[in-house]
Amino acid sequence: MTGAEARRALVGIVMGSDSDFPIMSETARVLKKFGIAYEMEVLSAHRTPTRAHEYASTARERGLKVVIAAAGAAAHLAGMMAASTTLPVIGVPLASSSLGGLDALLATVQMPGGIPVATMAIDKAGAVNAAILAAEIIALSDEPVARRLLDHKQEMVEAIARKNALLQKQIAEEK
Image (cartoon, rainbow, N blue to C red):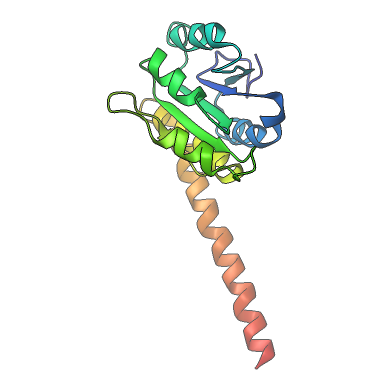
């Protein structure tokens, strides 16, 4: 297990290939910031379907609260996870094909009724937002995570205020 702390993983991060790790390491980075332990594995809906099903169908009993699944091209991993567990599944489409991730986005978002997958943006923004959404789900019953989320929102407000102050200074200097 790779994780934010030596605690039991609450989030499972799965990806279709080890080449997806540079993007999905962003998910791990954000979960670590919120103090949320995670596990990470390479699974394939097409090449290791039995293992992928086993992972998802045992996720709840292993203590996971959320599964984040990232894949490119046909991108069936998130759907397979959702079909095999009752935990929330967050899909991250990856731009690993000549279609720039549009194929993965459509495959991830077009789930049949009854098998929901919360679908994020393509690549890094989606990887980051998947971690934040997982933290928001966990924060429903974890007050320390809820406080860290509030701190995160405040940090964003302060960062924008600093950027705006710099912009206003540049504009004033140009006049």
